[in-house]
Amino acid sequence: MYFVYIIESEKTLRYYIGQTEDLEARVRRHNLGRNLSTKAYVPWRLKWWKEFETRADAMKMERRLKEIKSREGIKNYIFAHNFRGIAQSG
Image 1 (cartoon, rainbow, N blue to C red):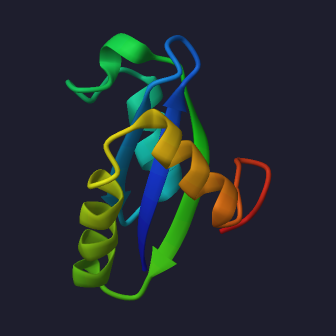
Image 2 (cartoon, rainbow, N blue to C red):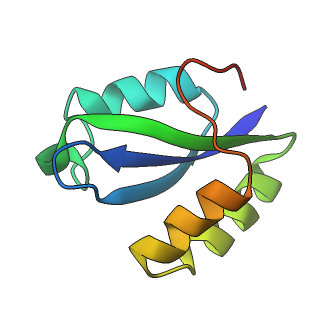
Image 3 (cartoon, helix red, strand yellow):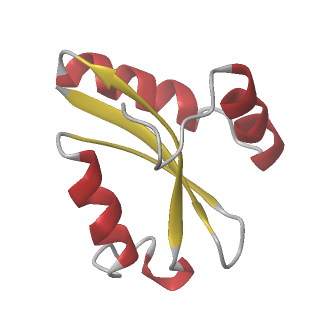
């Protein structure tokens, strides 16, 4: 399985969109500062995710989400598409 996810910086409220095979490990790497594009905004919290059977499908969804340029647009997407957080299973 592959996951598309949206995380939010607790420090700056910035969103980051990505895709991975191991969601838990990926969020942990973000919070450990092991990603160049996100390390300045640690800590991160998982706001939303969705599972896909293929990486190609996950990448299509990731691109679609990244086309939403505004913070408000991403926030609205999360609200409209069943918010998911760390305490809930995928």
